[in-house]
Image 1 (cartoon, helix red, strand yellow):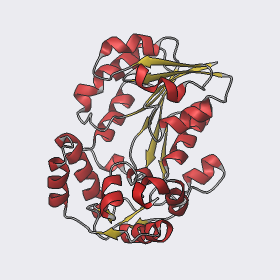
Image 2 (cartoon, helix red, strand yellow):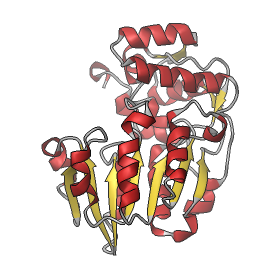
Image 3 (cartoon, rainbow, N blue to C red):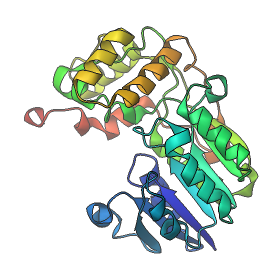
Image 4 (cartoon, rainbow, N blue to C red):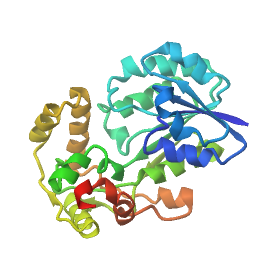
Length: 292
């Protein structure tokens, strides 16, 4: 029986992953969360699942989280942007354990972008000689109903500095499904999987899709990288996190986010979810309550 530690289980990738793994009676799950009491209700209906306190910045939380574990799935928390400081102790501890596989959610094109935290984390895992699977997705559709939700919901605008570039958006639910396959199929050991949607779209096209489905005019204001950074910092978003966002959108403007792969179909034997499906499923995240 595999015993899998999932870190990031409350998020848009981790939770769908847990929903799948929890149906497999040959898997035992430990989910590392920052504050157990805050999330107990969300996980109470899952069998064979244990919630434990976990913090990348607190090595005292590592032993309990890793107890009996042979596989690890994790996502880098956005606010942790200095891998040599905030990820090295975790990976060093993992190396000391008998871990058979680490599945890390990285970033498409990361091999060409050594400045990104994802690139540095991949390198650290390889150097630790831990068997790995790197899942490298394109931009998440769910960024729209999280990071950019406020602008869409209140201003009916995509305030995103991507210019006229195209992005091969992917639904995070598809990423979770792929991760579940990778954790249960040894064929994906020491592999890098580039995950995208079926097509690359501009944000103008995204705005058109949202306008049609939400029945509300959604614009795309194309802010400059400088203006986007200034506004995000003014809103109280941590500077390190904003800087990573700016770096990723610069990469997008350079045309590095438009790559389309067929990996989803190869792994899941079905097409990836479309942007239309996503907007319909998350429709109420974009509409103010007074309009509902």
